[in-house]
Amino acid sequence: MEYAYLGSNAISFAVWIFLYWHRKDLRRMMLIMSICAMPLALFDLVFVPAYWKPVTLFHMPVGLEGFLYSFSVGGIAAVIYAELTKRTPRHIRAWRASTKHALWVPVVMFTTFVVAYALKVPNPEIAAYIAVTAGVALTIYLRPDLALHIPYGAVAFGVVYFACLKIWILLFPGAQEWFVFQNMPKLFIWGVPGWEAIFGFFFGASWSNLYEILFGYRLVPVRAPGKFKTERARTRSTDRKRSAK
Image 1 (cartoon, rainbow, N blue to C red):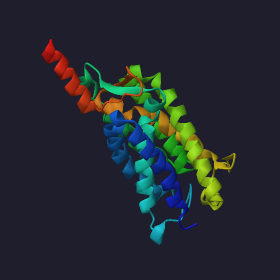
Image 2 (cartoon, one colour):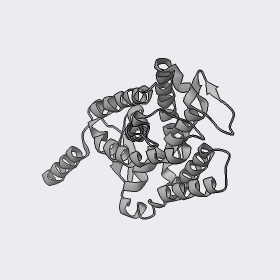
Image 3 (cartoon, rainbow, N blue to C red):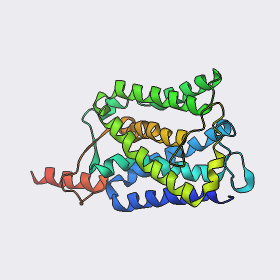
């Protein structure tokens, strides 16, 4: 079981590599949100051992695997909805004004988690659910146009995340024992740690829209499916058209 955590990394990173290779127009988005997700691994300082007890290389409290896993999951969650619906990011007209209060979303989520955890919720996972819900509510308040995308992003990532967890458990069945679920029902869905699978839907609802609200984008349908241009290439193309006029 020493390499089971690395096994989960390999599964999620394979999905990340495919998306990065397949969608050139989403590469910048993936990289930024993957890097932004890496610090989430530090939450293991409070999730271990109340929520789970993973076996990490060198038996570190926060393993290297956690940072790698957060990197992959963050990138997948950010773009999976765009991939499945064949959409691409475009700046909204008033994007600078729309991002003015955007940083409040991650700040509110983090603050809500800290407050909920300090109030002695039964398990830090419950604090995470509350924090993500607060972040989603604020996202809808700041960007009502994203309200319809949120449930789709939640389902898109939630399903992919469940599939990755299922493959992982099939390859490393002993990993089930890592999930303690202290003061929570021992929920498993088709052999998959239930509370972790459910969190995938919560995370997808939040993370799938975070890039858009932070940087002033909206996902729009690709005009010619299968021909995905990078953001820089689209800008050059638009400039040439304007020059021609």
